[in-house]
Length: 490
Image 1 (cartoon, rainbow, N blue to C red):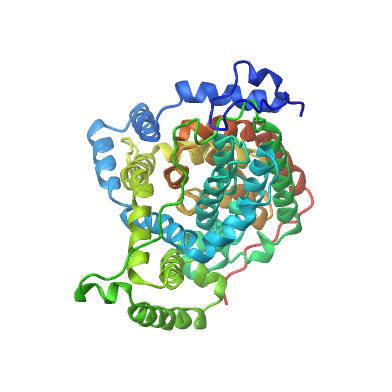
Image 2 (image 1 turned 60 degrees about the horizontal axis):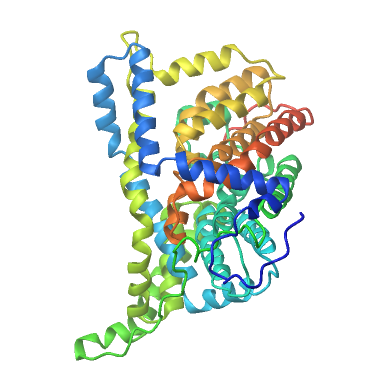
């Protein structure tokens, strides 16, 4: 994309020159405009979820649910996701502790030295984040955020920090649900994890029929390429880039020096003895978990995943004092999770539990309309749109699948749609609203020191391209698959 020659007389931390955006390419100008709009009008993530609560409550009231029932469902659901909330907080803490350990920081620093331009750095963050998301969505958030921070520390590189933040979010907005950490695919491959009523509808659907379908891998590849290209092309060039320094954000690496023990009671804090013993104890449990089930099943359990990351973080930091300092530094990034996830739990409860006099919930109304309006040919497209819209209000891949799957998979059976592909339709479409939903942005923006409004302009541009591409692929590739009846365990 054409850019104005760099003004070498302007200090590296100075704001963009007036009119600099006019010299950018069309995608970069669009990204800048969307971001300018978002910075002015996009609410804080808490305001966003509070508005969603009100909308869902009004929808339940319009459906005929009495006000006391709506209030009760709100309160009953508010604390229902506390275990999941803590798991998500520990995903952030564990990822942060591992990523800030000396060995991983050295790897991130070496990677951060590779890009030659600010735009190239943004595209590099996008690629690295999406690759890591195929392994773990939690890792992709933390790793991508810390890579963006490392790049922002380079004095020879003028990189738009907001665009880099949006690129670091692409693992959650584009590819995570097509990889090994796909909640829906993991649930369907493990009969013990499925509710009996859902298992009776879907049977067991192995990875070979979901994420390892060539059609699914093709979608993942196309999204990967498109996302990197858009991230690169939409990133402002050097004359229009807004750096971390321009935003007043300190990205300097915090000191790793924890000093030496001053009192006898501090000796164990600086000794690796307890680290070794704790790691051996944790690994003994992990080995047993992996011995009794497949590694894919084991790693899909968030408790196992979090214990692995915390144990690895402790081992990489080596001394308990250094580990505890890293944990303390990670906690502020969990603030949004702790206060907002209960509100999302309340939304889910109001959708399903606030019923009218006939015993019908808002979710039931949506369900009946969805099933009655579909045909075999329209099912993938319709399900994709529906999953994307619902995902904006209930942004939990696994939890929403348990709500949505009973009726959409029953419809898939009745319409003779490939059941594994129905899961992948859900996966690909469910990730779309993540691009503009601040729910999953919280851990990332906490690490970056940004607000959701700072990155949503660039991620919205990604959504504009992803939406028609994903829906077309879901519809077209469904034509290449043949329906098979559910396969029951045993």
